[in-house]
Length: 429
Image (cartoon, rainbow, N blue to C red; front, side, top):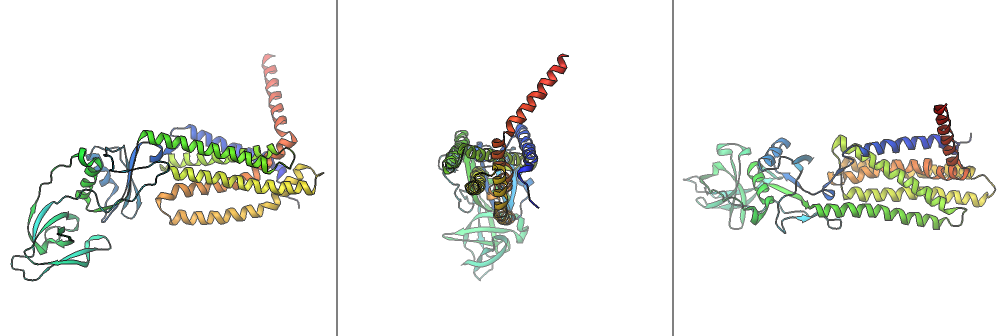
């Protein structure tokens, strides 16, 4: 039994038209896409806390600091991705995210760390050294190894108080004496005297320091995994560069395909068909992300643009594989109908395309399940793009070539004109 993929091109075009139409409708409904920080001004921070913190508590803390617009998302165990309006940070207080500069990892804890008090180690009648401990696997309330020993009666500086570990004797202090820093329970201390910390001057340290000091005072120490801020000027440059990248890539792809297939009749049609399939894939991927943004708040970022360019390359690659087989079939059977040569090429390359795509989809799915938040947009774009690109190489690119050769588009337009003329004549009568 012969499989006739070319014969059902009308149904394939209908399915593609419906998918593209739905995507365009989704993109027409605001917001078309939810922009990430690279495409809109603002500040994002990724924090990892040492103890349990709820999203509601973080939102309340930011609201108290004058940022009720803060969006808090869980990014892993004890990790939170927080986005706010652009913070007032002095020069050097953050790393700008530009199209060619990656966000840097910041050091442990907020800056600066201010002393909160002093205390005396050991009870009044203690004779043995007091042990300063390290936290066990980052858990402040559980002690691990010994950080150092100090004689009883030693006055130390307190740089952190952790009431979440308990009250009274179970209270935990983070203390320092010279170069030695460790943790100790209140039961092994006495005479705690609180130092009233002067207010942080935003003009000196920036709003970031104010926010992070307040977070540490409420929730204990934390690690700053990422911190980035983007101004409106930088975000507009990123949008412009992203659009230019896609347009330039499409232009060079079209020129390359026309050159590569210059030995076959009408090579420009091959290039045009590849670009039509490319646009088909890009529009559907954008529509999918518009839906994801509306339902799940998924943002697009520069990783999304990178993945979109990868999808463009994958789409054209699949189309060229089919076109190359068509060219070979035309060389071997020059008198055969183009539709027959195209149908044979599609059947000959289908198993290769499906095997490649399925293998890639398995890998991408595994990375989606096991990977982190930072590459999720990239992986989702690849996932959707591979599915759509595999379909378009079979159901769009080569089919457009046949439809163009057989004059299908002219017939469809003529039928629409005839139907319109008939309707107008009926209305006039």
